[in-house]
Amino acid sequence: MKLYADRVPVALRQLITDLLVVVWVYLWIRVALWIHDVVEKLAVPGRKLESAGSGIADNLADAGGKVGRVPIVGDELTAPFTGAADAARSLADAGQQQQDFVGQLALILPAVAVGVPLALVLFMWLPMRVRWIRRAGIAAAVRNDPAGQDLLALRALASQPLTKLAKLGPDIAQSWRSGDAAAVSALAALELRELGLHNR
Image (tube, rainbow, N blue to C red; front, side):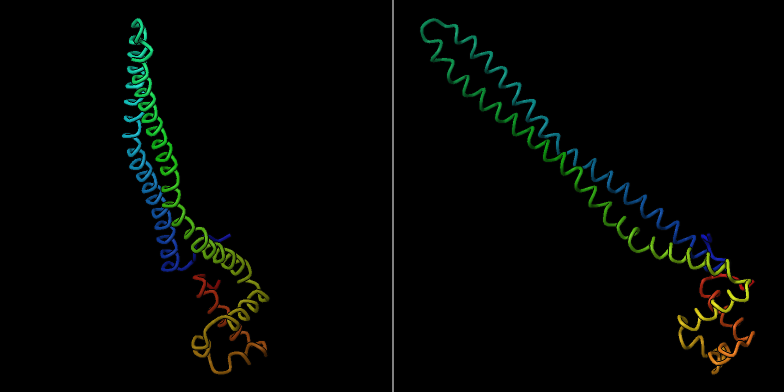
């Protein structure tokens, strides 16, 4: 398995690209964590609202209990305190719901923020990199074998642009068909050069 090309410019380009991809992924993970922290701060008002609502509800229920002990009119005086305590509990519930919503948002937004860049890496860069590693590994394994040179020459004839093939001579395909060793070597070298490999 070959991870990097033999030729320095190609290998350097591959190494720089790989490092940029690692930095890209790291930065987006940091952005996702930052988004999570920022969104989590939105839950603070909900926590305060829940705490205040619960405190007010408890105080009103306690006051209603004390007023309820007043002889004759105690039950009538308790009703407003009970209603106010229920309203305060509703505020506390609203604070809790706001916290739940912010908690869900703190999971979804960072996932989206990191998911799109990671998808670009997984579905664009990684397949191209793996394809090159496979092609270069096979080419490096067969480049010293005469039959492998012939396969590389055939690959060059099938995939290289006509302008590059024409530079090797107008009858390069005929020379390859007739088994001309110089033509086979030139075509194999062209294919290896395209992959960034030396013709050993």
